[in-house]
Amino acid sequence: MEEHESVQVVELRISYRYATAHPWVVQAIRGFLSAYFMEHPGFRVQRYMEELESGTHLWICEAPPTMKFLRLLRRLKEDIPPCQTQQVTADVPARSRYLIDCLDQPTEP
Image (cartoon, rainbow, N blue to C red; front, side, top):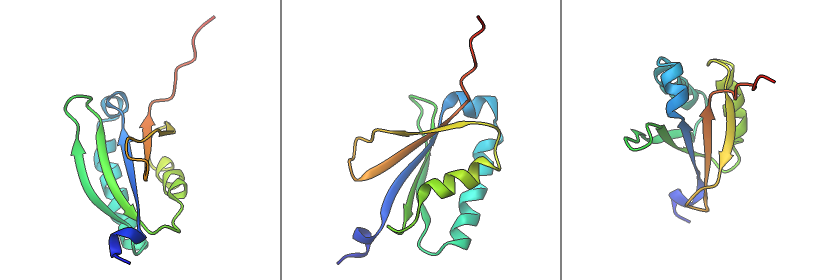
């Protein structure tokens, strides 16, 4: 079995709205993922990019198949401003995709 078959690939995105509301968060997440790499063998960031069309920031991560990515998200949410995370339908079925966005503002009656 080849090495790339024994990992899960996960996309972590930050919405333009969240990045604009909290400009320092992109650097904070970059640092968090670097520290997570040091703590958990097998986890790594494959690639980081800012999508110009949508303004979203994207990290493509590799993790062992036994790693629970939701645990990483819970830890990350403790270090950044309040947000909502949602799993987004991926174009590539074998790849999980998560989006971090601002909390929805309640509408006034």
